[in-house]
Amino acid sequence: GTPVPPSAAEAAGRLLAAGLGRSGFPKARPRLGVILGTGLGGLIDRLEGEQSVPANRLGFLPRTTALGHAGRVAWGDCDGRCVVMLQGRVHAYEGHPAEVLTRGVELLAAVGVDRLLVTNAAGGIANGLVVGETVVLEDHIDLVRGRWAAPSSLRQRSQVCYDEGLAHAAIVAAGQAGAVCRRGVYAYMLGPSYETRAEYRMLRRFGVDVVG
Image 1 (tube, rainbow, N blue to C red):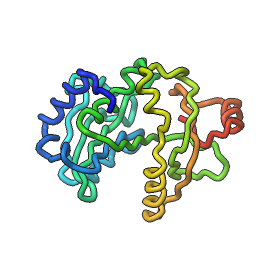
Image 2 (cartoon, helix red, strand yellow; image 1 turned 90 degrees about the vertical axis):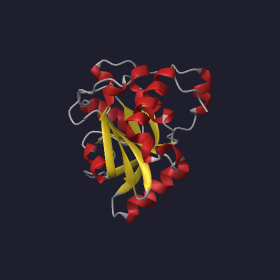
Image 3 (cartoon, rainbow, N blue to C red; image 1 turned 60 degrees about the vertical axis):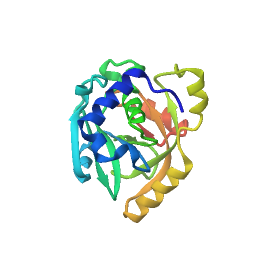
Image 4 (tube, rainbow, N blue to C red; image 1 turned 135 degrees about the vertical axis):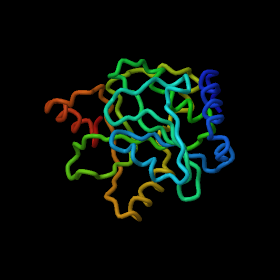
């Protein structure tokens, strides 16, 4: 796989020493990581035997400042599987460069995560979307960052951002839970302000379903 940055490996060591290692996570399969977006931080309470540490105590992740992002790394069992969750994250509009925004993912990879679920609270612009509906992404449009600055080896590995098998499993799971769910395309905007009506019209013409 892609080499883990030394600083991420050091932070992962601190996280394992803080109790994650004793939970048996490094040996658990599937090894799932979840990044909890705005309004979803309370999901850590669903973890059995939940433990957590402040993310910035690891010396690698920056302190979160956005409302609804507690800035903790939590772990515990969910349906018999050990899961690691980032309770909140930092954003580009908080003044962080791209290499800092990805540190949460690097940390999860360093502790052994090989399946990642990223969530957020997005605005729906597609016709028929209802409040609270779940959208499983099938593609995205980046209107902020432009060219991906990662090494060419990583870019080649990142051609497929959205795993079709996991997306199908998410749709099935949502249906079993009685949740309204669909596939869609996401537009990445800088924020934190909302888009203008003209921008919403533009995004619809681009084929975008949700924006954030």
